[in-house]
Length: 373
Image (tube, rainbow, N blue to C red; front, side, top):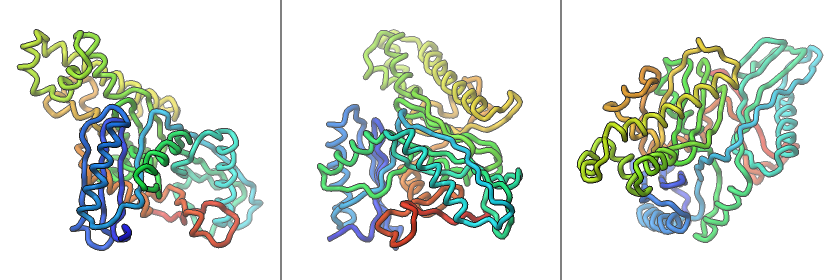
């Protein structure tokens, strides 16, 4: 029996896997799974086997393919701006397609080792007037577009294809987890015009920034929750496993600390110092890359496993407490974020249609009709 009723979305993190089988016709049948913590791909393979077994049992379908969600410090965001002179002619969708295809070819030539996950139209400029959507029925002399490409090294894609091939599972679509989640969660903060989603993972922190409700910046910092664990291990002179347990159970570790003769105040100072450093780097990145001055205000939404140590009890102890909110997310939230993105929830994104669906036309990958929100 083929898996034709369920779409499976799998978020493959550095230390945990989350998966969801989503019924196309009956959401009541949806089922979600979360792996145990792991530190290497051998253990991850064991966890995948368990998840596949549960998926097939609960859906009564063989798992042949998945939609993969990944987030890596090696992710490469590339921003390009291109222009085309139209000499006053009416703007057509094909004009945008031409510029996108040109930009894509530049990426493939100059970053031949990269795989493009997402193509996002940051801005349209028509005769020096900015638009966040493609206007219809308008004449144009000069057309410019600003594009964000979110890429990952091809070697990572090849690794995952090979990894899942061992389980007779193919990969249909691949999403950047933090980007997909920010698109989905943004609707819960619609009243905040300038907002950044900070996804603190195991060894990376992803930043997705929205200016006036439109995505304007994506960046990945090679620093995450594992750096906090290493700080604790080094300063307290304990092994990494003990440091990780203290970090993950900050509000429950008093007895453990007493036995080890470790000061709770010192532990908090170590953890919050690193978190403040991560947030400072995020703020500097957002303002630097977008030429924003120090007066620019925005809200930061913290998500990801690395942010879980900051509950409301400890939030006020860091210097950015007034600028941050903590977002609790479930496996269902994470998997459905990719589902929503595949259904076209982000009107700024170029929707990629697989080759096998294209029967005619010049473009290898086709392009989403942009509409005003």
